[in-house]
Length: 425
Image (cartoon, rainbow, N blue to C red; front, side):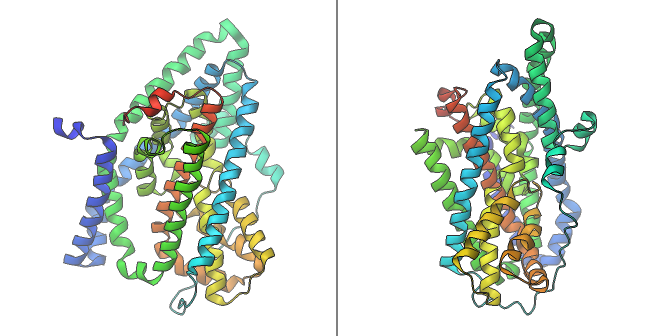
């Protein structure tokens, strides 16, 4: 098996994705799509499920240990304010550009023009009562930190970890043993994450094979223009927006950035979950990009919660798709409201598959789309949403890493020599 480990992990993951697609298509052509989906579900999908469970297992200990260790590494709690403002500002800026690109792609490619929705079955969308801003802010403060850790409440975990890290610094010598514990724990958890990542090629193969046969070529053909618009828009955003940050603003090699994040991008694409990918994102940013603990442990978990560039871009395109399909006339004011609403609802969207699709009703309400039309659009897109969700999750993770790299460099927490070296994983 020595030859296997000589191959770079990212190369193994990309190869597994390609083999997963080929295997899914070949199996579907031999025994039929339904039979192939059932066979993979019974015999192969468990490997992907195991992989997702393993990386989800790492989320809470990794966030908590690396964030506390990162605060300790800062040495000064006052740096948190600057880092927080810089991070939030960067995330808002990239989301703004994602909105613009999404609206441009929807206007130029017109994916909804001439689409036949007669065969679509309406999918009712229920949101319940939305929490107020005060309730959202209060929910960040956990009533029970242990329960927050058990539930995987990322924002609450971040808040509690910040307090623990600040407390260790303020305590001085008395807090040093606990600080040493968290420094050691973060190193151990990152090492365990590397072990888990060795299963990635097998998990990715399973997940991609199942997605290939469960979606079906016929379903993809029905909305091929929409899929192309979303993928092209996401590609442009990743290359232009993040490329501008890395190459022009930071003066770092762009190819090296994408190569360093290849494993995280591939896992994000196959799982369609930025939350599940978080341990891989932190490991890749730390080991390959040289982002130190003080930034990786705080910026990346926050990004997996509030930075949803792919979702904002996607919602903008879907809004124009809906308007074109049903013949709604949009004014410049409507475009502004779509962009603003898509950005707001994308912040804090759940980092799980297809979560953004159910935010669509809020965006569509800005230009008076009826509940019936909204249900038809959701029903039309839902069967193949996973294909687009995979791509926008990959972009979300890439954006998290780009912002973390920028913040790290500006704060003097980036090891540029490591950034320019060949990827470790």
